[in-house]
Length: 267
Image (tube, helix red, strand yellow):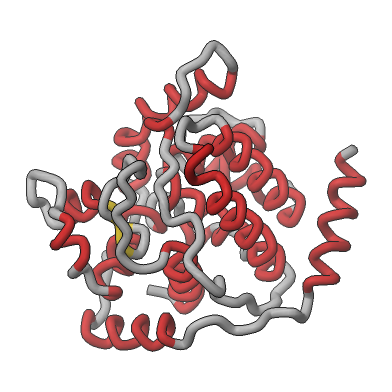
């Protein structure tokens, strides 16, 4: 696992927090962004993991799952700085296919949920800061269309705001901080969408159907197997999370200026 991906996973861990099992969260028992269904599939249990199994999930195993099931389908190492984190966090929260399709619609390429050469080439032709901003705006529109928005909308909004600021800092080469407290722990997948006749509603239905195929198809492009010492990784991530929040005041004025500038240019 690269140092850059490890930093991104650390940021996601900061947003996701520890074990949670909210009765209104369709994802059920979740820890470090890993749901019971994801954990069961990763361990090939033939069923969802039990809440107790989720509760005992280690940081090291969670990091390996996020790498294999999220980073690799997104072709994370080939994404520009900042956009890699923004897309990865969206994928963990709402599924890789949903995140990629949202990005592809912004890029005006086929929204098949698979990061291929055409998608990567389209990304290279765009201003990354502007693309990060537009991706967060589109992500919020998607979240507002979910039936669970009234319950979890405040947390999701805070999470997207943090991702936006952090991703823009990363795009500028500025270090970013772990969120001061868990935000947006609840899953936000297309399966929770309100079925409607709107374009957004139709998009979420298509995204749900394409999730499994997109993950399998993208995995075929993976060239590198997952490696690493589980014990060492466990210690490293434990130290990263235990480090807690780091104040990140420097660069906020630059971020505000950049956001205003790009929005003005897009108007």
